[in-house]
Image (cartoon, protein in one colour):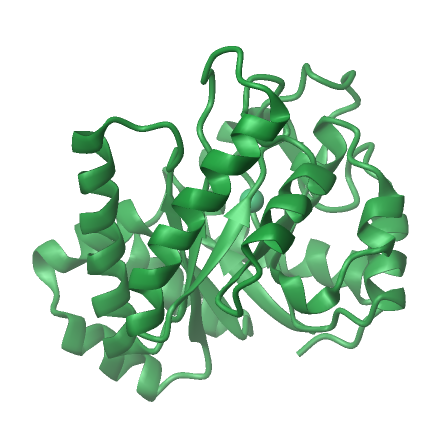
Length: 278
Ligand code: ZN
């Protein structure tokens, strides 16, 4: 299992250049690059510098985060999403980063699950068609908030199965899985090949529907039964990568080096019980 760093973990105490240097130092295999951090980086660096860095380093880019709120958008907003997609596909080609996280919309109104599925399938197919031309893949991330249009693993998996394209899969994020009571039986029935990205984290012990990103904790420090999720992933034959993704303001106050180092240690402690890391 390769170990990956998601830049949300150091959202307010680092930048891409620093994250890359620290992740290389602390032995991460992969990084998930945030779109906002990439844009900041490109203000003072070139894509060539980034691709040179990856060519001469152990760490490799794995995915971009994220095209957000892709469904139920106005024509004009959707055009903006398509422009961002194009940009990420082009940069992805240069640096060999082929996965893009896509997030469903929130507060869409009183649509039925059937209607949400139709809209999600339509949009994913359209975005996937563009991505395919660049050899890029889309990872659809359900969000465990009550007002997200796709908020459980089962619902997201159903959509991705319906899309049925090689370049469309899922993000499994332990926090989102736990936050709206996704069912472990649904994960047990899933095809591991459809899980493109695995986000690890933990959560404070709040009831379903009350958890928000700032309640995330380091893996092993919270209420999520991570052992059950990891055991199930092992059972279904998933063994690709694990990405530590926190959004906790408390950790953003730390020195970035301490955050990157702790992310690695905490993830290895929990995941190392079931998988060989690296
Ligand atoms: Zn996530």
